[in-house]
Image 1 (spheres, rainbow, N blue to C red):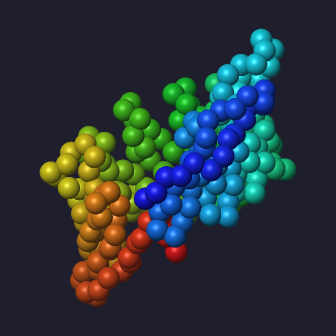
Image 2: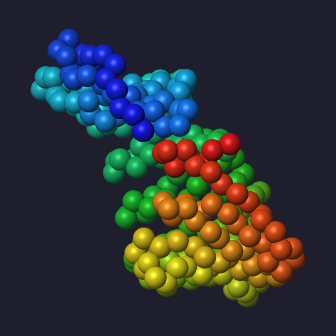
Length: 237
């Protein structure tokens, strides 16, 4: 890993910030400004507004993203994005985003009194969720055209999900998860037992606790998947 200064960045007032830096990791290059905000990654660029309030009536500029991966972002004085390209997010009085655009489309979202999303709606698809007093999601149901297509309940050991139950089949165990008992806080999965397929999946991990391989057992003894990761945790192609 090599760090190198590549120039001076200026604030909106025109005052120099500090020399920015670039990081070279293998064949990939990442650029950062003085606030350690990512401003470039290979052929993708990012930009942010400045830190600090410039006037009593101005937007409090705290480093909100303004450009990222070809998209333009606009933020209000509550640091909420009011425009992402041609999409206009919406928020409730508590600041929760109620209109969200994802890879699966635009969703309307309702939150409970603890600001947890409990209802997602897109056309005739409705997803509802329930949480216990510790904030753990214990129920998930998806309906389409009024018909239930998925309904799961979840069982926890503290905050680790250990079972997923099929609520439409008498709460039969559908999936079980075994976690590394030697690391109770920053733990990692070791085994996933898919009861409906009579299949066990075993996990191995790299030094950062990312899953590196998934092995089949029972139906076929082979590697189900292998994963490599970019420096920021994204799965490499």
